[in-house]
Length: 253
Image (tube, rainbow, N blue to C red; front, side, top):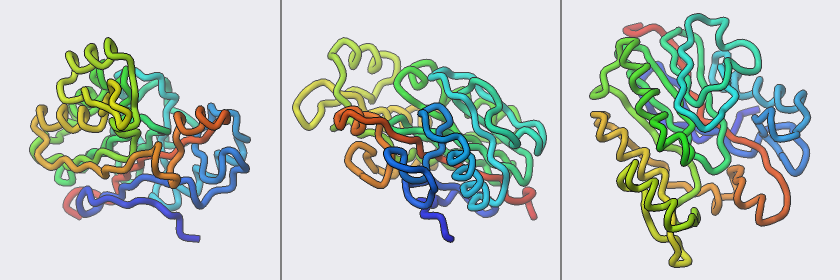
């Protein structure tokens, strides 16, 4: 079957995209392509779903146990992409051909990065705490250590809860805005809010990344994606979708 993935262009030889809820084997309320091992779904179903994503990516995918921090794991060889997780980190970077990295989200911001010329890719999970802690900058710095140049990096900010739907206390809004200018906003209800996607884009541009694109899709509104807040309102739980990027071939091949 063809997996329904929202594909994005990060350059020739790079396979990148954001999964949706469709195309998997998980039962409700995780239906269907749940990729999270920590949301009480059947682990066998999650691993079957992850195998489908790896088949789409054309490479084994390295996943992490995400902790809303700023630590980065750098893949050192193909074996790093085998197994369930590579550790407690919120960003993964690879320059190993034939590998992929993925981050799991359900309202937080998935960020995909690639420098095609250097053959380096990265993925970051940017929730409120991670964004303030500098996870986006840390992922980009790890890529630079592997030979990437910010001016060559393409970045896509994936589906996440929009500022219009992410209501927070005014003090929290002001605190995050002070750390990451551009995040403060007002929700549809006229209350204090945070636009994390705008904050991520501002951080990337401030770091010298010239090609920054946003999908503009809100997970709370768009039923194609898992949303923690939407599930909370319904009194249920939900799964995790992913941003995945693969180094499909050697630079210059």
